[in-house]
Structures are given as C-alpha cells and as structure tokens.
Image (tube, rainbow, N blue to C red; front, side, top):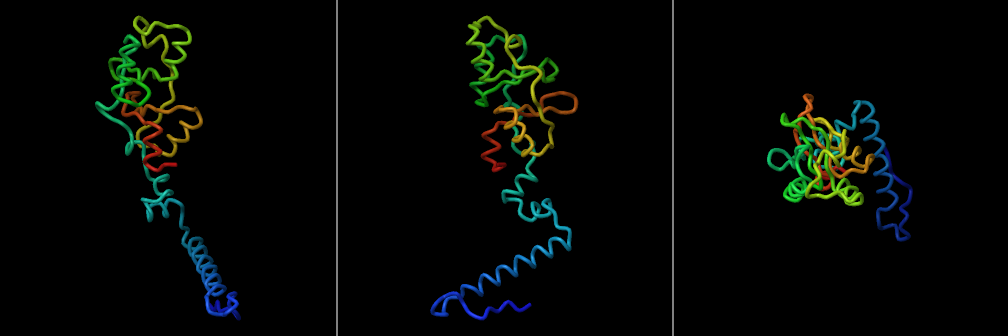
Length: 185
C-alpha cells in the first residue's frame, strides 16, 4: 500500500509532516479492518490491556475491591445508634450494614440516615438502628463488575454498597472511594 505524498507540508521540505499523517491514517485503517475481520471485541481488548482503563472497567469485579471479614462494618437492628456510630467510625466507610443473627442483610445505616435522625431530634443514646436505618437497601452480588457497582452508586447517590450472596448474606462492602482509587471510572 503506497502512502507517499507528493510534498511535505513543511515549507522547507525537511520535516516529515504530511507523510507521517498519511502513514498514521493508513495504520489506523488497517487496524480497524483487522479488528472487524477478526471480530475483536471490547472484552478482547480488555484482556490484552488489563491495566488500562477499559481493562479495569471490563475485568475488575466486586470481589477484587470489596471490604471483607473484620473490615466490614456490621450492626444489629437492636443496637443503639451510638454503637452503630462507633462501628462506622472504626471501619471508616460511612456506613454500617444492618444484619440479623445469620448475617443476612436487613438494611444499612449511613451518614445520611444519621443526619436525618438528628434533624428529627432522635436521641442517639436511646434510639435503635432499626428505627432509622434504610431498608431495604441497594445491594450487588459477588462477582459482579465493579463498574456496575459504581454505576449503581452514581444512579442512587450512595457512597457504599453491600455485596450480598444468593442466600442474602453479607459477603462484603464496597465504597465509592475504593472504586475510584481502583480506576473504575
């Protein structure tokens, strides 16, 4: 394929200007033709470039960035608000997931729930988590794309998302900041 140009754009005819542009355009055309011929998909691209932005969006899973075990903030529905606040402070995720004795998710108690409770003059020393928690809450499954978790957080304007398995049990907690730090956006 001949991509020679009759004349360079450089007035002195020294700098390869037009020829480099023509070569670049031909290279792009060949790459696109090859992509289409081979049926190359975004997923193929992500596997070839896992560290890139597209790779992270298409390959990073909730399991890769969620907080698990002792890192997960948990509270019971009968816990006092003051105890839930201590749990939120210890785990630094801006939320505590409200679970039953079997670790099944009942809801969440967030910074926003606290502000609304204080607006209603709820006493944090006597009120129970069940009185002010958000339930049901938004959740996502283990193994889901981290990009989907971020999309949900943006859509519902939430900063944390419980990861819940098929039995309804808490598997982990995702935080918006962790997703952004992982390069999902």
